[in-house]
Image 1 (cartoon, protein in one colour):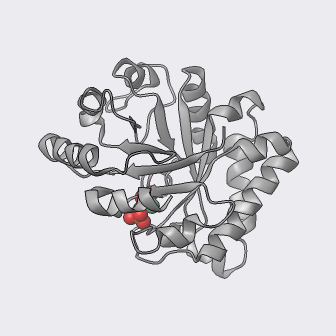
Image 2 (spheres, helix red, strand yellow):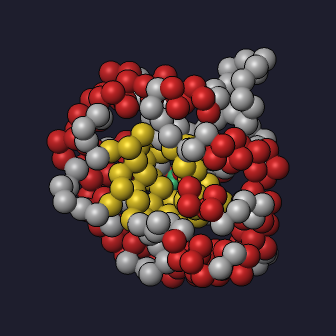
Length: 250
Ligand code: PEP
């Protein structure tokens, strides 16, 4: 069901001790009584201990990636079953850094989505155009193709476990944020395309997050847009005060 979500993607940051320090700060400082689902995505090595540490709190833990195979000879990879075995049932898939540096295509990502859903996991699926796509005015096509190739094979029922994160690549870690109106344009477009493929119920029930240089200072304006249901936060998720302010804005 559509609801407000703020998720922190910690990327390849924070040792074991640093992870637990940040978790303690979040437990202490996160605003109480907000109707916002708060998710943190530490590195693989700290997932199990983060789940244990957060037991009894409202903070959920997500993985930043997983492999599409059930298991086998895939050195260095992590399966859905392994994530579930340490209490993780949310996974971020399709982050632009995975697409760019690890050559994850929409076809690979569609496989990963299928595997995650088979294991009853929720997926935060990232899509977004590069600067060249925006400059050439191809961005809506790029976003549509990412949706179609990564997610439009799913059934209506399966969409209950899908959250979309619109993350323009040119805004990730660059300090350049999409304006609230630019974010709203794309979020409305994504919702419209989901409705066109499925129906209004699926479209209205899908949470669509914005990601790309969201900060304590700009979150409120971005989150005020009607089709923006929250954010996927990178850099600002590593600083407890900033992340808590962003949650407060949602
Ligand atoms: C991200 O990596 O998902 C992200 C949005 O990063 P940042 O907030 O640092 O731009």
